[in-house]
Length: 472
Ligand code: SAH
Ligand code: SF4
Ligand code: F3S
Image 1 (tube, rainbow, N blue to C red):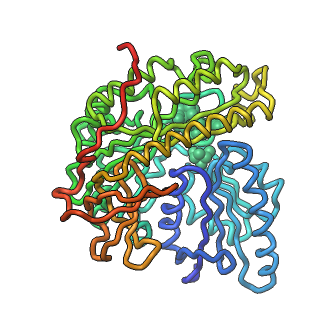
Image 2: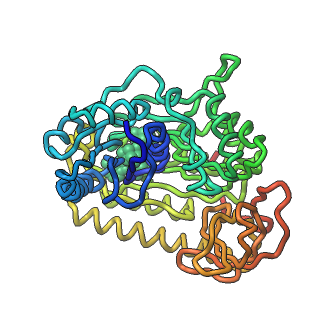
Image 3: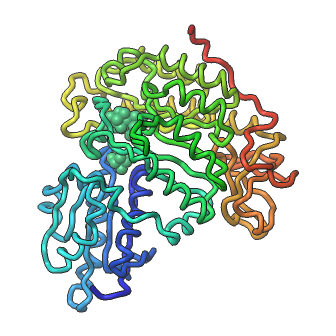
């Protein structure tokens, strides 16, 4: 294989795809591929796709159409372009993509990324490659370690996938079909990767998994560790100042994880805990395996140990059978919890999921109207949450140069973007900042302090949020 080829990766969907895209780039490095941001100069284009909603899946076909034109322009140049579709659409639709889009040379699912060099060789030799099996071997054991190049590109924050797949089978969701059964990476593999990230200058690690809090990794002594125990070990790694994890299922927040929020300073007081609906009837139809009361109790327990905890969530409106009363319950739940942010979606029936075959689909205009009301409520909560920061002291991890010269951009413990006048030499440090201006999507502040000793400190003077009023 010749040297100096270029790979362009376009990433759709969730953070796990962002992580996977970097791993694909790392896996291709020994074959002489380096990443490019310019699609027209690429020898290999990979679309890393998402199947979660119909719109996400359809985007892929329009992108394939655009790239086909580039490919055709290059066809006679003696330097052909290979087009690959990876990710969850590839896993779900496999052969169908190959049939519908003849310009695609390779189709491979998330469990095949470690085989990428071999798949690309086969495609370069003219084979049409479709690889959507769930292989028995552990792809993580075969994927190369995160390279310094991809790590540096991402700066002082990094994603680290520790768990993949899902056994929950919520009735609306494709993930159990596209990512397969739950699999946790062994503890030693996770710790080694985190140490390498820290050595490369990473200060904040976000642990990823479709169901990250179901993590149960095998440890060297043959036992298994849950996420709480893993967080303790990660917090000990020199250089790692902040830990986050996403996405969690309310059913899998065990005592040790709840205690980790109380006991580990590096665990940030911000939790993405999707509930999808505030109606018990809908929660049951969705197979979420908990009630709204369970959710309230859980939040109260976490906030009891970590009063400044802020929450974000995911909501689906218009699941089959959702009535006005069900939707009212969702609005009520949002009022009671008080979110710092949330993602809201209109239900999108996905082929092969139980939800798609249910009766009583909600008309599109009703979905749109409910979505607008929910979004307005959440926007108000987000605004209030940010407004409450005005004049406060907040610890900010300075991550990158700001928009204006002399400014740096960073994040608060609650993932808010913060801009501050500061020299570049402070990049990668955590500083205390007094917030002086609250904008629509960011905060602006002034440095008031030397570096925060030891790195992570939550809010010095912020005690957020009330109890949900759940009866425990
Ligand atoms: N594992 C996570 C969710 C992963 S999918 C969890 O259990 O919470 C991310 C979000 O997409 C979901 O939380 C849900 O809100 C949304 N989603 C999933 N399937 C959907 C569908 N068919 N229609 C609309 N939204 C959907
Ligand atoms: Fe999908 Fe439910 Fe699994 Fe989350 S827990 S990935 S929503 S099936
Ligand atoms: Fe999408 Fe697959 Fe992630 S369906 S949300 S890219 S797990």
